[in-house]
Image 1: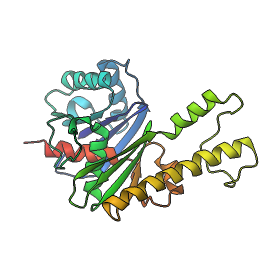
Image 2 (image 1 turned 120 degrees about the vertical axis):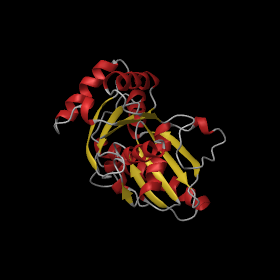
Image 3 (image 1 turned 60 degrees about the vertical axis):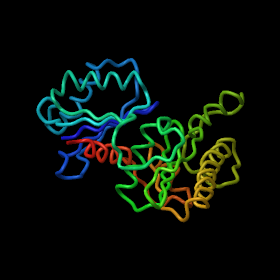
Image 4 (image 1 turned 45 degrees about the vertical axis):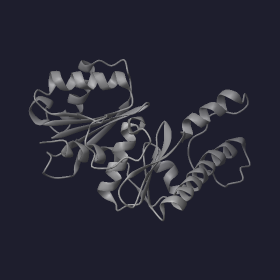
Length: 260
């Protein structure tokens, strides 16, 4: 089995795939809060609990580990966990020097986040370019892939939850609301007004950026991933496909490209 771990600033997603070369199906996946204080032993305990749902053990059934991480302390803990508990299982961490099979046109390729690389490779695995991949996470990232399959760059904006946290912190009389579609665009209560601004305003932001990218890329396949993709994505006119586990797909592909 291949264990794919996508560690973001807020949440960590763990996916379990059949062995490379076999089925490409995701056996299962789990989501937990990212905690930089967790030790490698604590992470191993959590992973074993998840694997146990299917009757697997990491020391017998996991034959490879792929990691995308934006949190250095967690990256180190994952390395230590793999070394201590997974024996000789090969570890691939997305970092400079890793083979992706995708040219990166960023002025400094080292600046591109590991999750963005995994998303772009995952998108190319599933769809023909040009592509725009939108990841709704702590930040909302837009990754553009040219018709030649090159990573062109993209855009980064504050995530919807960060934006709302700033609103609540700065406006004394505004309060937290559920992230759900309001009854109408024109809100008649404070709750509906905040929901309208958050949901329709953010979806308009996404559509506006995607259309401007298409002015440079040409007509593109547009897909959404990330924890809030299922919430915001359906309200966006430009998003055609929801791929909640896109980063894991990219991790699997990158792992296979880095094996002998």
